[in-house]
Amino acid sequence: MSAALAFDSRTSLYDRVRRVIPPMEWPAFADDVDAILRLKRARNAVILAHNYMTPEIFHCVADITGDSLALAREAQTVRAEIIVVAGVHFMAETAKMLNPGKTVLIPDLQAGCSLASSITAEDVRLLRQRYPGRPVITYVNTSAAVKAESDICCTSGNAKKIVESLGEPEVIMIPDKYLAANVARETGVKIISWEGACEVHERFTARQIRTLRAENPGVVVLAHPECPPDVVDEADFAGSTAAMSEYVQHRQPGRVVLITECSMADNVAVLHPKVDFVRPCNLCPHMKRISLSNIRASLENLQHEVTIDPAIAAGARQAVERMLNV
Ligand code: 13P
Ligand code: SF4
Image 1 (cartoon, rainbow, N blue to C red):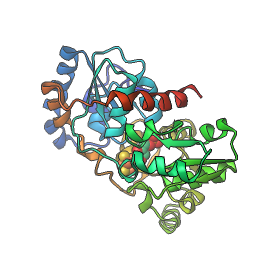
Image 2 (image 1 turned 90 degrees about the vertical axis):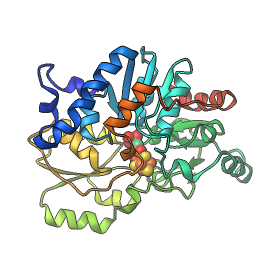
Image 3 (image 1 turned 135 degrees about the horizontal axis):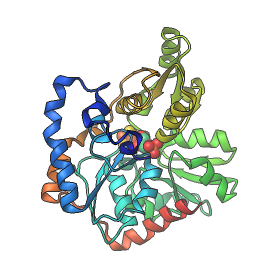
């Protein structure tokens, strides 16, 4: 769902975020918000924003918001000429491969991901040699070159479904060793994984969750499947960022903690004033490279354009489209 649609059209932009942005901080954002809204119209552009963007981006300038799966799906339906991805580089590459004819911009080219940088296309070729005949399922948090060496992609929102759809007793799932371990337990499929991890989610510990429960009686714990399996074991529910958001929306827990990146709780909290959010704060340094000011500069100067070598793009697109078709 677009964050903008979650509000009544009469809600002022500041009212959308007043629960998480103090009034004295808003003037520092207001000028960039106005300029971005104007530039989007002038340039025929849309902004796709991941759930980890800060609230002034997520609730005030984004057109389409969601988890990696939703952003990939929605990227296919965009009519505008220009897509600005408020997220990390692999998300912009995915938008580009699904929209080869459009201009896809990312406000900071350095917005990477510890998972994407943990594996190369050559690594995938070597894995195939070592484990012949096993299908390669690649998490979308990877480069286009790695996707191009893969049979099919997955996200945290559909990993279980994708593994089950293949009907194989053994698969290669790269590069997140924790997601792979969590999906192996859920499906019973033998998974050959890779030594990659998300630098945000690997920092959560089972002990931390037990302490959170002791200090916050009755708290409902929702964890991202990039967390280690013993952390997921301590949680009441594990799912993608969108699944966590939907859990809060539908179940309205009295008190909740989201075991994931920090801004996510702010974005969900503004929509659910009756829910009390406990907030351990692990920031993703890559996601936090995206700001209102570099989104504005991106639209003003049409920077930084994301391109993919056509020889790579065809294979990568096929792996993503196979996923979207499951
Ligand atoms: P989601 O697809 O669940 O939004 O996860 C993306 C991501 O980068 C999590 O760290
Ligand atoms: Fe990558 Fe983790 Fe940041 Fe997501 S939160 S972009 S998986 S480093």
